[in-house]
Amino acid sequence: MPDRTDHLASLFVAGARAAAARDAWGVDAAIDELAVRVAGDADPAGVLGPSAARAAAAALERLWESGWQPAEVVRAVRRSSGPRHAAVVTEAVVADPAATAAGAPPPWRAQLVDLAAACAHGASAPPSRPTSGGAPHGWFALLVAGAGSWVEVTGTVIEALGVLVGLPALAPLLPPPSAWGRGAWVAPEGSGDPLLEKVRALLAKAESTAFAPEAAALTAKAQELIRRHALDGVDPPGAGGAGDGRGRPSPRRLAVDDPYADAKSNLLAAIGAANDVRCVWHADLATMTLVGFPADVEGVEALFTSLLVQASRQMLAERPSADRGRGGALRAYRHAFLLAFAGRIGERLAEAAAAGTRAVEAERSESMLPVLADRRALVDAAVDDLFPRLRTGRRRRVSDAEGWLAGRAAADEASLGPAPPLLRRAHR
Image (cartoon, rainbow, N blue to C red):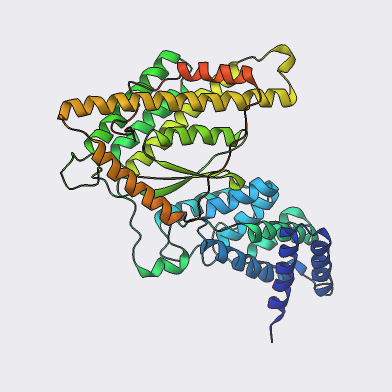
């Protein structure tokens, strides 16, 4: 027969399923039943803690095996329900035995370190919170100590678990806990490249300076390094390579945060298209999966960060017409601005990439189209493996002409450097 902990955990699960179905009555019924079951206990939080931990561990195990990573889970809950629920899930993840087992890949461990630091400094954690050790279910009691009401915490936990229950499966980018004992994880080739680290450092300086000529010079230097890096990694036709000597295509997920996440994703997709990196947009999660050769993906991420800063800076500096500067009209203006900025940046990158391809072909006296075709074919095959049911969606339409024109003008002024990475886009 199931023990008391199992029975209480089943009530948490029932409440979570009701929350996922937006069944408020079912959530209240689960909370009421839990209250009845612990009515005679001197320490309700101590009784409910192991049960809440068991229910959370089951929900998290499904997510780990479905392609999710710790930071992604917490972000999804925060986007869906807010910081209180995210704090609950953060505590549960940091205490989850599966997520914290030995053998985790370095990126996974790094996320846990960041989440543990958030727990230690979060508003939900009382000053006496232990930094390590303790029972895995202790996070429930800690939340109760911070809130003062185990009933309130129980409701928040059930609602947070409801978000976890409703999350869809993702393409796996890291091995799940069940696979950690089967061999060492190998980072994709090209990650951590010293030259790309220098690119990111230059772009970080460009984003932080208020002096436009300095930012343009730093961005131009960073772009020059990306171009040189791309050229060095491309095999000439007939060399027997796939067009890039630095590994094979691999995926990476990037969070694209609000406001205007959909419009920002257009900018990321435009940069990716110019660099032979395929971009798959998860609209419900505001997350983009990039698939390409590791060095290309690194360069796209660095360029996106820098150009997004430039776009945001110019967008906030622009003043729409006096009668359009408030409320929904302002939002429509800025959404159109970012979409136009993305479109024009894509055009500029494609034009510069085509010019770069012609220059290299003239230097080598041979066409690079076969190499580029091989590289694109490998990227496309990787996308097909990860997303066998991929669909093409429709973007939101632009509803503000003034914002559109301002965005294109800002894109013409944005600093790209001499050119985008060479050998990146050939005529199909």
